[in-house]
Length: 374
Image (spheres, rainbow, N blue to C red):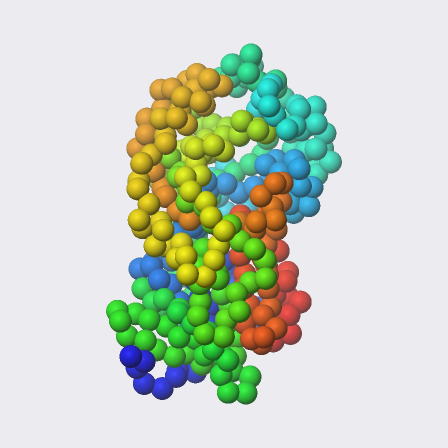
């Protein structure tokens, strides 16, 4: 049942991940919104995809086949570090190694690509190069790339939202968006079996994997989405790898990145991290698919393959695994592109859907919002 009359507010943000939180702060501080409600289905902010990921602040190196994505990352990284210095881990050595076989980029091409986007790169020192099996690795480079602590970003978000007067409703799920009277929207919510209506002028759908899973007049996004259930293995590294982050590319692709929130490393692998994938459709609840998915870790297969390239990885200890639904734009399955999704719904004026592929994309979102007339 729906409790009482609709409560009126200026904007409703659906999703309390990093994007939803940052957009709410932006609307309050930069655009003068005074009555904002943020809905989060979990008991705290940044608990889902914002936490269950590689924790990489990109600087462009990851995207040699998408100049625009790479260049935008290179431009956005220093802004992110300056804005959230307390959440950024910089005190580790970051290495990119190019595989000799089956790589889609050679060492020379990778070096030239980094120079083209203006990203710092130099050949790694001998001790770093000694970590790798030379018969499988063409070259090794030291670069500038960082990791972020999502728990510290959550602390920032909670503080800023409170200071901005944003009302956060935890363990509350948005179920539908309807066209209301005149220029208003009505967002239906549910918590503990009790439904409520929020009347607002603007609604920002930042629910990531749940982007298309709202009922009512919500039309869904025009861009086709793909869903994946992924496993990020959390590893205790052996001494030789404790202060190092490594990415081997581009084909036999894997990464070991510091995960500051747990003082561990994530281990991800292009073949073994994705467990299951499907085209996003109404009626296929991604959260339910994740809940029912068997937690059968593939970490042993990851470690065995990675150990061929980095022998000391065989001594790493598996501590835990993070399972999550990863949502990507289907059109970018075959390349390195990770553009944001930013859609204004013409049939539902005042309603926006926002989805990003990586944390530094937040500046691309804010630029889009800067161009909007509210």
